[in-house]
Amino acid sequence: MKHLGKLLLLTLVLVMGQAVTATLVSAKTDKVKIDIPAGYRAVSIPAPAEQLLFVKKGDKVDIFVTLISSKDSANNGRVTADLLQNVTVLNVKKAKKGCAKGTLQLLLNPNEAQYAVLSVTQADYIAVGVRAIGDEELKPMEVATFSKLFK
Image (cartoon, rainbow, N blue to C red; front, top):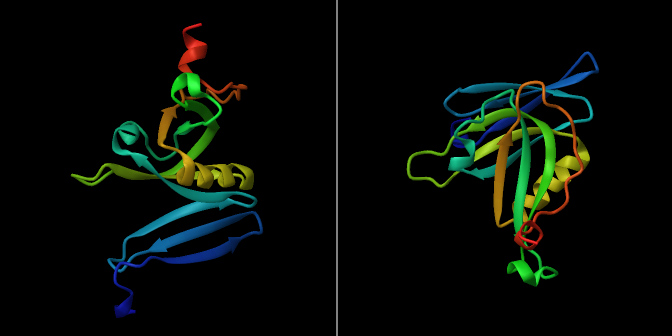
């Protein structure tokens, strides 16, 4: 055990066949208990510090990504998409002083999890929008560009 240092141990326990409880245990014996319903995934993504200022555990959020698209030269290739809507925040780790990014842990279905992981590797910028309490409606959103905005 003493060779583990700051490594996290992940223990999964099946609870009544419906939910999985993940307990993350660090060498400092800090514990975070997370209930993950069957069929969902807990996915951690880095997010800029300023995007996490008002985000807290239990919030519902939308995740936006900005990337360079070779198909959109009119906007210098920049496009923004509403990648995920109305997803639950499991935990937030704010950026440490002097660090530009923190971590957002989200509860996602497998399809959403794939897109979240892809966005981390492909997006130039990830933004988080906190939803109002009770606002759970999903809306189709087209990809945003400045050329569409200023037509």
